[in-house]
Amino acid sequence: MIKLWKWVILMSERTIAAIATPLGEGGISVIRISGEESIRVADKCFVAFSGEKLLELEGYQASYGRVTDKDGQTLDDAVALVFRAPKSYTGENVVEISVHGGTVITRQVLRRVLECGATLATGGEFTKRAFLNGKLDLTKAESVMGLISARNDAAAKISRGAREGRISRDTADILDKLLETAASLAAYADYPDEDIPNLNQENFSSLLDECYTKCEKLISTYDTGRAIREGVNCAIVGKPNVGKSTLMNLLCGTDRSIVTDIAGTTRDVVETNVNVGDIMLNLADTAGIHTTDDTVEKFGVDKAKEKIENAELLLAVFDSSIPLDDDDKQLLSSIRDKKCIIILNKTDLSPAFDKDDLGDFEIIEISAKMGDGYQELCSAIAQVCKTNMLSPDDTVLISERQRDCVNHALQAVIAARDTLLCGMTLDAVGVCVDDAIAALLELTGKRVTNEVCDEIFKRFCVGK
Ligand code: GDP
Image 1 (cartoon, rainbow, N blue to C red):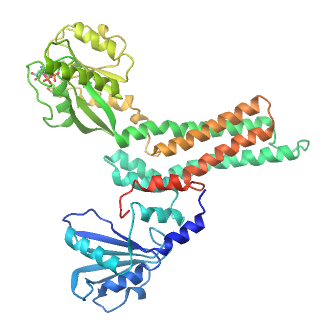
Image 2 (cartoon, protein in one colour):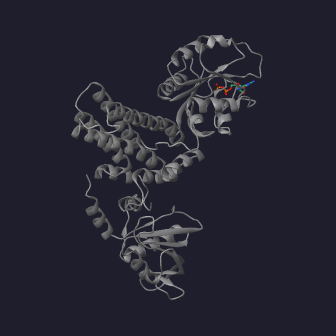
Image 3 (cartoon, rainbow, N blue to C red):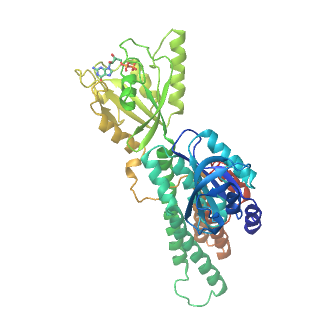
């Protein structure tokens, strides 16, 4: 376990700096400095037009001036914003220097700040310091990364929820219950003959049941959250000419795939990411699956089969204007165990298809060419991926690590319940409850190893 105090002291000896905005041409760029000496470091290269030193400023005050090189020559006009510990992102003294956006100027200013005594920050070091200084717990730190990398509104929303402390709050609820259980177990073990209210097996059992339900509910949100954040690997499959590429283009809103009435036009897998409602699909339009002697086509068909194997969701397309044939039947049998939506396409033409032949799959009827049935398809995708079940106030776990911790707690709670039921000593139940408590303390970072901590922050970009 980390010796937090030691780490904090070690870290705070270094004043760190990094470019906090993306490198490129833009309105402004921000160079961020954090650490006890940050204001002094900034004062060495920043000259205020008012003549005032940054050290004279209070927190949240800004100064307009210029950043100079070692000979006193101006590198750029700048605004320096001072934050005083502990009221800053990192909890340390922080100075943010805003200069004109541009790769060269920004790098020159950073170099100058480093010359003046700061060291280059490592990836995520600002947020790591915020965590070590108690400004945010680990779930909130992870949410910062989630917010930065969000690729759609829904992903930003769930990360914002975590940033506002929803995971911490729900975890604290479960922890309270577990701590109450642990305390009651200890009291009961010490005074078995006393008639203390609520100290009985029934009460322990119901406390553990509550913890079980809450842990399970939290875990159940993870897959939906992952689908929203990372997207769902989704393959469009079907025999040639049923309208797979037309469907791909409908979902993308552009002509991503080539559409012709010549069977076998799509010979390779065409891939793209597309937002469908709240969910992002990592979409692959595959070559039509059918029996062929053409070597190139065969290669495409094999790749399509591989995609079916690895996809988390299949959109299996059938042409409603022609009767079901052997290729369709073969496809139906190969997707039987997969998460799948059957799409009956070309509904603008006369039907020649008996829907009963498709068995008990969920069927959506569309005309990819005309755009009919698009909304129904979006709803079906949301339903299959369960994103429609997510209410705006739901807590959603946003990392595999968080899921592992809650799952560990859940397994420990199950073990505690089983131990209680089979009449083993209350000490044994207590050991399981302690295990669950430890897992949740790791989730929020109250008790976490150096390795876990490093693993989390190394995924951050430099400057965050
Ligand atoms: P793929 O081989 O499965 O990718 O099929 P394509 O998307 O290339 O379409 C094959 C042919 O069917 C093209 O001529 C499309 O214009 C046509 N097509 C696709 N979808 C529809 C539809 O909904 N209605 C009609 N009438 N034609 C369609």
